[in-house]
Length: 384
Image 1 (cartoon, rainbow, N blue to C red):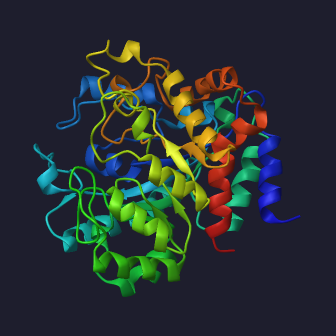
Image 2: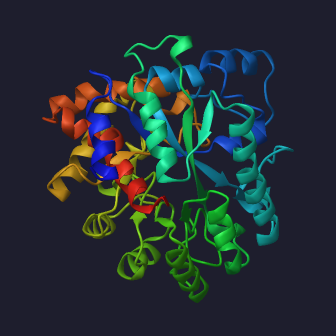
């Protein structure tokens, strides 16, 4: 039995009626190092602590906690290396992960990658680094027999696959094999615009340096993440990058009322990404479901039904359920104040299931959407 079939069979045996979730985008290192959040606590403990001792520069309530990962069957996340260019931060918190130069970004990103190693070594019961197929298979085996309603004694470690959001920290292409050796498995070229390509609110095409980086990434084996890339750059990548491509946390621009920016995915990018066997992680952020959500009634007016409709659209375009997953971006600059009314924390991603069922999706479809599709990607790129 090949490794992919083994993983798919494990998935089909999981947790009726709840499905295992792979979340393709969480800024864990950024939040822990910037704000001191401890995700081994429950989300409720974190909120209580931050309410009584407010953190400067932190204006949103967490959605993440180890208890909630387990209660919601969130078995694995793509943990980012992320730093914002200082120009994008109007009020800088003293510990914020920001940079003024690529050299500073390089230092921040290495610190974050080293931190993931430290975190998983110091709290192995809570987090586990996943860098190989063997790691992935062992991790799924550990989750296989967890009860449907786990108690604290049943809690399992959450897997972390390191990913880089914005490639500004790559200042020497010869360093790419070292990044890979230390566990990095996915790279998105942009957050804002940079020397490689245009990004969110800072449009621009792929540069010659960006093309060179793509060649080196493909040679090493990295996933390319199109999220945040400006459309002309993303389209060129889809035409030329020979490796695996995803959009870890991006919704369908044409479905979002009032939307007019360059952050979400155009129909052309979606069509070509599907043709390239990519996977799109949809984001349960109100602004990515209805850009005018505040004027249209606020949080109580936004339902997970809109996220299900995003998923349904992608499945209808593809003609199957093979190209969509979850990329929550939880705690990525927003919290419970900014998500659909059904969500209090990450465990509530399971509440998406009835909306998908209403749209005609069955158990096998939902298993693919929740984890199977990103599992396929990881099986394709992880070394033995």
